Image (cartoon, rainbow, N blue to C red):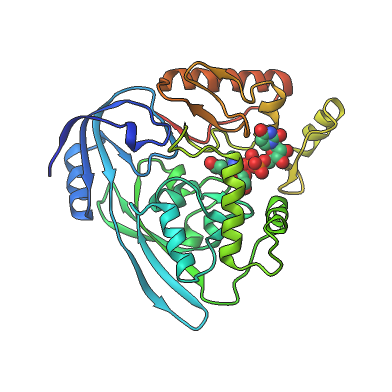
Length: 335
Ligand code: EPU
């Protein structure tokens, strides 16, 4: 096991924050992962694609970079293919791989930053599709027993941006994910408003999965900053879910407030709208700020400190709470 010292994590987190890992190891196999976890007891931090974290300080404990690689077809039938993908594969590169082979299911999830291993933890989702719709199962290392456990989709307790792996934080390390994708008769999800519009713009009448991916990519590129150009972590906050009665009360003061029905009693409100109405959209504070095209995204223009971004996040939370009486929670992990 080679443990490196004083490694900058700038290129390991999509916010591009320059925090130092005092001790760092890149893991390529499960055996080494087990050894590292066993030796460090609870004194380690895992990092995958670094797309869902805000680093606010240097890291004293061992940073374990999960770099497991590999994509393999494990079985197939007339209609479906089952593909096992190791946690350290880049998410979008894998989506492109499936599209090249004409396997359907992941096209709406194009261009999401991060690695495959993080996808089930967050139950990543975009444009009407969530990971739970395409995952067959996954394998995760139980950090207490050091056994590899298989979780079928139904065992993962998937919810909006949540799963058993997030609820029982620290207990499991997702090591690989098996996807169940279509080989033909692909089911397209184009009802999400902007996709249909984008396909019209592209003059596509009878879209393929590749066309849907291109449409999603174009929409994302038009609204969301590419972490290669501007550091960010995608949506910084989750969209809050409030009761229908609270929503009705808000509507009397804010008639244009958007909301999506999630159940008989609950409405999901876009946090981006709340933050924009609170006056933060496009606001820049030196090296950091709120993205000008999507208020849900906080950005690092180059040399921001995680602590400053955290302060901004807290200011946004308290202002939104003061104006609307709604609590918005961070989607990213604050470290
Ligand atoms: N809106 C505003 N101002 C803004 C941003 C959004 O008013 O600055 C309002 C608009 O009413 C818009 C609505 O919010 O119609 C929804 O916006 P959008 O379609 O961009 O989606 P979102 O709710 O802001 C969610 C996910 C994104 C995902 C998109 C598309 C969460 C926290 N975010 O954003 O996921 O790409 O839907 O499906 O659920 C991510 O998690 O990192 C992420 C980017």
